[in-house]
Image 1 (cartoon, rainbow, N blue to C red):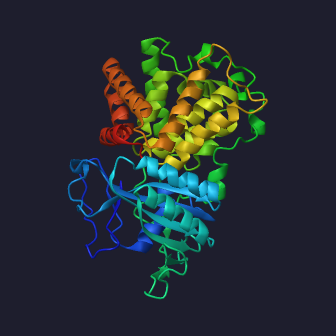
Image 2: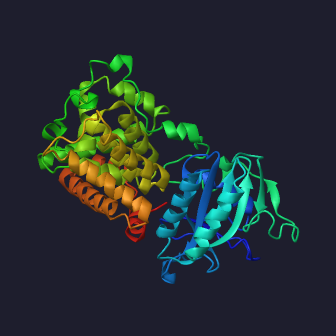
Image 3: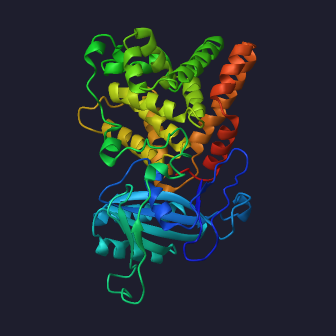
Length: 436
């Protein structure tokens, strides 16, 4: 969780101590540090955008971690909008809904790369009418090292502009922000720009070396994925499922050691058995649950890379399934923007003319229902119960596998890839409200 001191008082920076299993990122009371943390909190570097940073505290003061000053605020959600009135209005309403059950609600408004005075006025009116008091507004030329930023009036460019010296400065490197190093599964410096982030979920042409090799369920020619692999189902021998769980954990453990995980995935897909195994991982409920558990800890980025790479190459129901699981993995890694986009992409594509659609009577419809629940979670700020249930089931599956294996090597593998502290922290956060 990211915290910030109240920029309007002289409180010293927030202590960096955090309880076991939870990382509290200290942004102190440095405005430039807060602005520079935005790319890490969003998951990409926004351009020509308006960004809202919600500031609030839990309704239950006991939920505030020890060592955090009572004057400090949690930062989140962080919501981005294009510089058009409809997008700004929608983003403001989303933040208002998400923090409606919190106390000491306020918001910081950040404009990146453009003059948006009238839009700032619109946002200020919306937040004030909903009891989310705007704390400050800033404009930054870009979100990169050395970019200029300055504070702008909340009530129009002429309101009090001559009565005070408006803060101005240069940004530190966003890649060096403490928030960049404490987002689950992400290494500092791995923050894509907005264009690269937009391409992350796009379909890609099937690589030449894979044409004719991929199973039909990857190409969209076969809608019978459910019958072959038990999409979202519990079917399958228990012993076989345990073996698959061990294989999945070993696969993620190995993939995490590879520098170019996307290229490695494309190479592996040349083996039909590997392609079918990845299909089982996405489409059989016990394996999908375990994959979500693995996304909560240090292997979170690897899980996201696997699912994003699968979604880019796969078509039809398998692509939808990979996107829904990517959405869940992103929630567990505090990637709320990616989580919303991945789930929303499923709903948009499945409704397009000429799309594979949802074969009658197949549980692919369950995938679309999950996508709807995830989108609602993102847009309404509800507790992410559907993901919490996946984690609970995945933990049980892992524990059952550990008991059945009775093997020291399996125990070491599962202990290496499953961070129990991270699982507990994420599970508790999801139960209170969606992580952003």
